[in-house]
Image: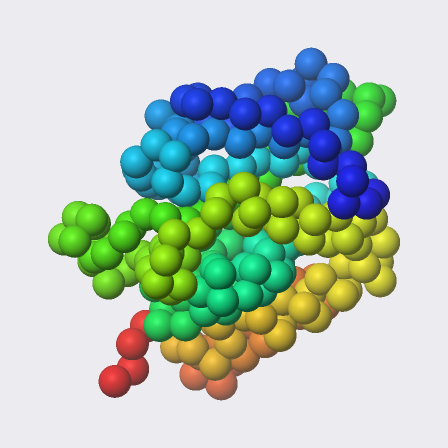
Length: 261
């Protein structure tokens, strides 16, 4: 799979959800590599059903259809591949996109001061026929490009928690240039999903770009939560957390960075 694969880019002024659209297209037989981009989503969502509203045309809202040859235990690495590609894209734009961003495990991009710049959501069609094509996975990413322009744009409860590339760069950022950089970076990242060595490289790159390592975190699971220090990323891309001298491996869950000062 190369970067030139992502040439079927479908654009929408308004859509309920680019992820939903591509999941429907996948069920209808669409091949890997289809991209959906929207100026505005009316039902965009993140992990655990969270929503995020921004003015139309201000941010990059994009989903990509992939059909990686992955078992269920490795499917989470699709999120890793897209998050790393987004970091690559911001780095490729250099000062035009502001300061470098890093990854908060498992699916957010953070500014240097810890404010959220982007979020990634992967959804698999687990009902795909077992004798059909490789089960599709749709990965959506929402990047705060030109909104918020300042903390005054945000509701009081989010002020200081979210940031845009425009804020980091001190000037508007071209969404089309960022999209092109993202798709170019995603080519080799998606290709890495297809082999054990490639998946190990994704986990290693995540380790080097993960802002969660060394942080005191609260891990929220479906059956409870715990607090500890994030210590590492496994070869499978899972997070390890030291809880009072006992190391726990987190395969899936929400992670909150806790202030220690």
